[in-house]
Image (cartoon, rainbow, N blue to C red; front, side, top):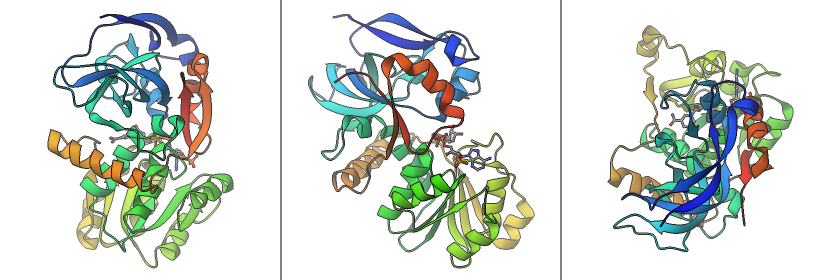
Length: 329
Ligand SMILES: NC(=O)c1ccc[n+]([C@@H]2O[C@H](COP(=O)([O-])OP(=O)(O)OC[C@H]3O[C@@H](n4cnc5c(N)ncnc54)[C@H](OP(=O)(O)O)[C@@H]3O)[C@@H](O)[C@H]2O)c1
C-alpha cells in the first residue's frame, strides 16, 4: 500500500523561510524496524536550526525531511513489529535517512518508540522522545547520576535541559538549573529545579558553589563555551561533566592538568545505546517514569503545521519550554 501526504523538507541550506518547502510525498510500507504513523504532533528544537544551516553533524546534503520526533497513530507496520495498526505512539523518526516528522505521515524507528504513557497529551508526547532520551543518556548511561548527588543542568529552560531537570529530580538528585533570564530561571524552578541561576544576570561561579553546597557531582552540558567552563570550575572532586552539545556555539574547553589535579571526568554523550537491549532498557525506564507522572514535557509554544519554516527560524532564540508543532488530531 502506498500512502500520500504533505511534508516539510529542507531543499537548500540557509534561511529556513526560503529553504524549507512543503511537498507531497509517497510512503511505501515500512521496512523491518520501522512503523508508519499518521502524525498528531512533532517536537522541535535547536537541532532543526542546525540542520537548516548545514551544521548538523549526522546529515548530508539536502533535500531531506526535518523533524526528529513525533506522536502519532500507527497506520502500517514493518515485518515482525511489536506494534499494531491504531496504536498511539511516540518516538524518533527516520530523519537520519531523510524522512522527518514535520509531515502528515512519518516513519518511526521502532526501537526508539513506546506507546504514549497515559498522563501525556499529544503535545507532551510529541515533545518527549529526543529530550528525555538525551537526558537519560547524559544522566544515567554516561553520567552515572545517583540519588543524593548534586546535579547542575546548563541550558535548563531549553528542550534537553527541562528533561534533565525532571529526570534528575526523579532520580533523587538535587538540581541546580542555569538559564539566561529571570523569566527562564523562574520557569526552571516551576518545573522542579531546587535552585536556578541566571548566567547573564548573576555571578555564576559563586551562585553554583552556593547552590551545590561546595561542588557539583555532575554537570549536564548542552551549552559549552564560557558557561560550561564556569560550571566545570564548580565541580566537586571526583565530579563528572557530561558533554551533550554546544548551543553557545563552542564546546567546553577542558584542561587535562586541571582534570588530573581535581580528579574529575568528562564523558561524551550521544543519545544512542548502540544495542537493541540498551535502547529497550532506556525507553522502558522513561516510559515507567512518565506513567508515574514524574516526567511530563513542559510544553512551551505550539505552532501550526503551516508555520514550520517560521518556527525553525525562531529556534536560535527559543522561549522557555518545549516547542511543538500540531499536525492533526
Ligand atoms: N548528544 C546528543 O545526543 C544530543 C541530543 C539532543 C541535543 N543535543 C545538542 O544539545 C544542544 C542543545 O539542544 P536543545 O535541543 O536542548 O536546545 P535548546 O532547546 O535551544 O536549548 C539550548 C539552551 O542553551 C542555552 N544557551 C544558548 N547559548 C548559551 C550561552 N552562551 N550560555 C549559556 N546558555 C546558552 C539557551 O538558554 P538561555 O537562553 O537560557 O541561555 C537554550 O535554552 C544542541 O547543541 C544539540 O545539538 C545533543
